[in-house]
Length: 375
Image 1 (tube, rainbow, N blue to C red):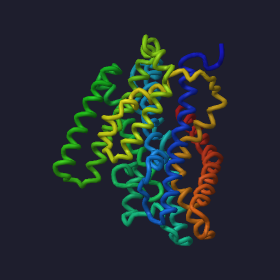
Image 2 (spheres, rainbow, N blue to C red):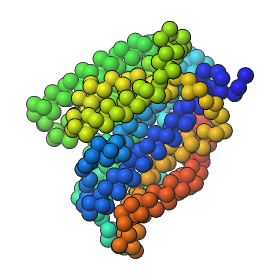
Image 3 (tube, helix red, strand yellow):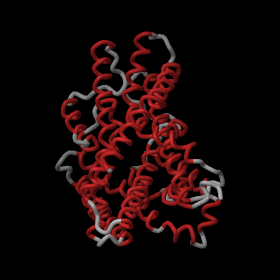
Image 4 (cartoon, rainbow, N blue to C red):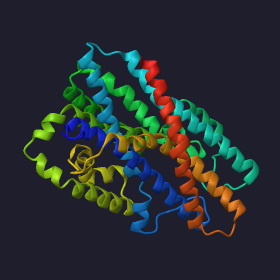
């Protein structure tokens, strides 16, 4: 029997590969965004064409991350409950902290140091400049609140970590509330998500008491949680999904649903449809993203071949913003006449190399540290 022929093993290998793929997707989208900024000579870049919109769509990767997170966190909890009766809250939150925090703070420190260099020595601030309230944003990031009060300069792409931590806390609480009956917890979560989304969206439209930005975040958090909840539901009903009579047909055409998700989402974004509208009007996402994990790709993925790619995902996601901004600023200072595409290409290659070496080394160190903490 091939090493990845067991459904759980095959899914685990696909998840590892997709982690790296989604991080790379976000990275390339921000690289292209940087190219548009440098080419236009301004601090923001509006998409000009449908193709620009496609290449700037880092939200595809974030959407995939949310699904994988919901799937894997519930997988971990269900395995723990199967081994030991009762839920060990202390162990769960300790494991989550050691998984997220160490590398997150390394990335934040990298952003602070590199942006200090940019402002002090290079004096190039045309890309992702630090906001005037940078100390408040830095303080928020220290407590994982950058998704609420604004990201710290070039570390702004880490906004989704705020959402993830909310889901890490909320899911076991709802599970406990539902008596650790996962399908009931899914229904409760959907009720909470839709109820809070409607409440905050209504407040945002009616009277933004706490400010427009905070209301947008408040209703987008439950909206984004729908993909997280879908991941948990797919993990809980894994066997039933794979044995359902329509699954073979869906599995065979999984790539069509993925392409439909990408095409429809890009078109809706290009037409400036709101986030809520893009979710409602794009049914491909609810089938395409799960099928990327559950469907048989008809290729063998060996654990040894995807482990590095999985380890790359988190450091690349966290570190690419500060490194891209610093390297682009350095190159623009030293070679002011260099074309934008060359600046971005060199910056992207060097950023990827640093994340793939130093970043992966740090990631593996912290993963081993987490294992020691758990033992």
